[in-house]
Image (cartoon, rainbow, N blue to C red; front, side, top):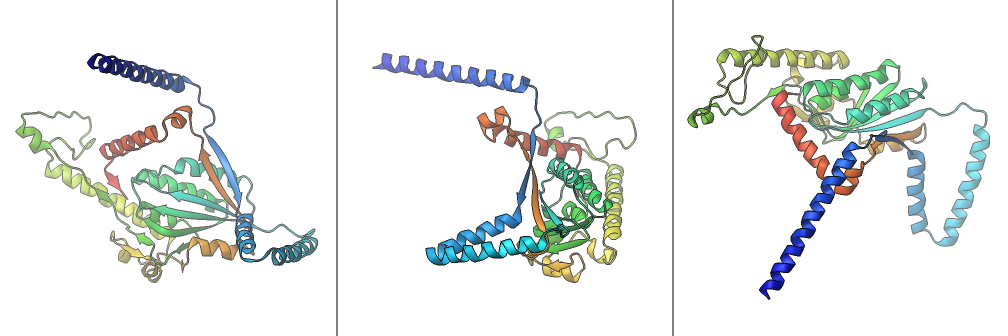
Length: 341
């Protein structure tokens, strides 16, 4: 029996070793392939989507004859409407974008392509709606995201930002570019402030008898560090940098929202939607769903989404590589730049 178990265990070990070798070869082959265009633009007609939802529910609650009669009536009305609209100027279009933020504002990579695409076809009467969910993060990443939205304004297209959950810190920096900010009653907005935080392991290393060396050219190439002993001069320099960044943030918000009492709201605090309305941080209390449904009568609504194609490795290993890359990005970003909106 023991000989059988030994043979069986040896067989399993060989199989596992073979699988590991196969996976390694596949990864090498996959990484060596020439990358094709890794994104694809998806466009959805939301007028049709809402119409189909209504029809599905109507079919479920009406009996067969009643539903048939209703369809016949709607077909006649649609035909009549097409005749009336023949030769008329096309309705304005509302282009809908989604942005779900993270600490590095990673979706700016796809949003910039979505904006480029819509700007290539948009006309003066068209508008853009951004559904924003962003708690903020690294300063320059969110500055770039806000700059992408400014491209829409520079083309004289009306931009509305809708916040159902949160647009705080760098997220609010993006939102304030809009002509109009609409928020749900309990959405979180504001947090106009700057943060820097990092642990310091100097005493722990010193206790363990480990020296940390850092060599720079330029007095302020690096101020506070995670492993070295930080001086008051270095701390003061970091505080000065934070104040300068905060001033830039305040000025940016003031430029785009001139009715704001910037002294009152640029404290780093956040507010819920109804409170934000009183402070002029937003212009209207409404969810994105209400906004879109109300727009159906006046606009042809198109949702634009740049989808990243899954590579061979992603298909094979699911989200393992993506999760690892995400964790690596977080560690790298925290080590390289500790200032956050």
